[in-house]
Image 1: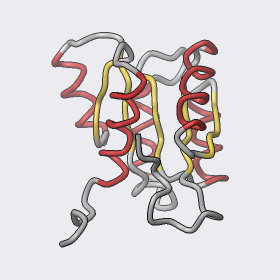
Image 2: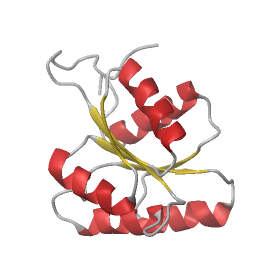
Image 3: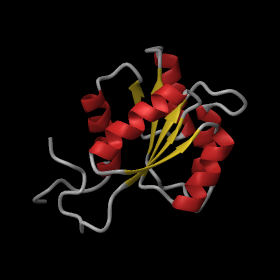
Image 4: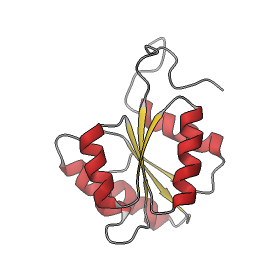
Length: 140
């Protein structure tokens, strides 16, 4: 599998912020993304995710929907309202295939929604897709 660092300077790794209140999932996703060449930051709540996003300006944010306090929809809306981080692609993860949740995620500003149950390889592909959204295809 190709890494997201192809075509980039070796000193510049893409970065991802994972925001999820489930330690098992954040650990798994951190491991998978680091194996693919990402620098990974982790936040366990929406407010902490917003702080880390502003501090680290990641290349992409992977955000859980269901979190106590501030859910992923609210976090995504706050990201889109903040001039410093509004252009960072957001992948919202869900444990359900409810189409209304997908619609709500897109209304909140998500670039892509994905199921948490996806294989690691497919989830990484979704993250890459979000990273490349809006960029011209190679050779264009």
